[in-house]
Amino acid sequence: MDPTPLLAHFNARTFALHGLCTAVLCCLIALTLQATGQGAWDAQLVYSLAVGLISWLVIDLGRLLLTRHQAIPWPAGWRGPLLVSAGIAAGALLGGAIGRLYRGDDQPFSLGQALTSPAGLTTLALTAAISIAMCLVLYHRGKAQELQRAIVQSQRDTAEARLKLLEAQLEPHMVFNTLANLRVLIASDTPRAEAMLDHFIAYLRATLAGARTPQHALEAEFARLGDYLELMAVRMGARLRYQLELPAELAGAAVPSLLLQPLVENAIRHGLEPQIAGGEIVVRAQATRQGQLLLEVLDNGAGLGEEPPEARTLEGARHFGLTQVRERLLTLHGSQATLTLEARAEGGTRCSVSLPLLC
Image (cartoon, rainbow, N blue to C red; front, side, top):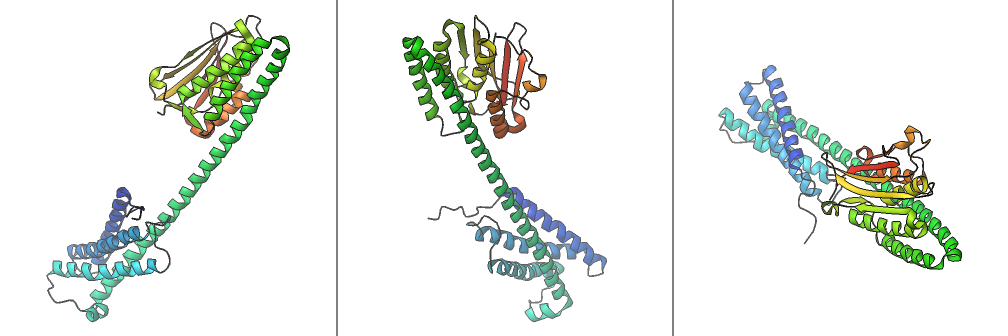
């Protein structure tokens, strides 16, 4: 059984629009014929609609059936002209019969008379004009749709490649920092070095498990972030305290992988480490009334200091980790995502990310 749908390109709204355009064109032709004295308005309208709509149905349904294996919804090669000829013939014969029936003309149809009489030639000319115009519209519309699909696919492939490049840049950044810390601890505090190595292995295991997709569940992101913070807690000891707040209803929300860790790393490096006493980091998630997912990283560290205002937004982030987050959000969500840095009234920094809530 052929798995391809019988009408792969069928779209009810587009199909109805084609029919409406054909009907409007038939009305204009009827007006033209009536204005040139070819007959009464009602007779010309019925004649034009019968001819045009029958030709449209034959051609539009025919091209859908013939192109179910093609990307462009128009028959290739000799099948296109043959389909147009079939539509013209069906419109001329059946539409002409309906038109004659409406006028009360009960004489049998004669092909020779239809091709030599003014009325027959008019019918044939009307059918050909309507059919050819409709076919040109269908062909160019299908071509434009195929080009649009190719552009969208190209953009998607580019975005995926860009995300993989960003991940490849960010992961070694964290790994090298951890290995450097391990080197120091091995010589000065072997038990802490061993504990740090255990957490590092757990972190790498979670990272490798989630590396195959650009997005994963928020609970997986929080689990990996927990491993990272435990890793940092071994190095900083009592100077680092943290809380992770993830509501159960948001556990399955889709987020870019490795989204929060760069923000937390930035808070530790620029907020907590400059302080002798260290500090606390709170990471929390919540849903907004606007259907957005709001992720916040709060610290009570050294604050923004001399950070310029333009560096506190999605477009202006300058630190390595913030730059990677900015690039990932722009690639995946464009203007629907925001990243902001702001000073907290009680001291420290608030970094917030807002992105579409996808479950």
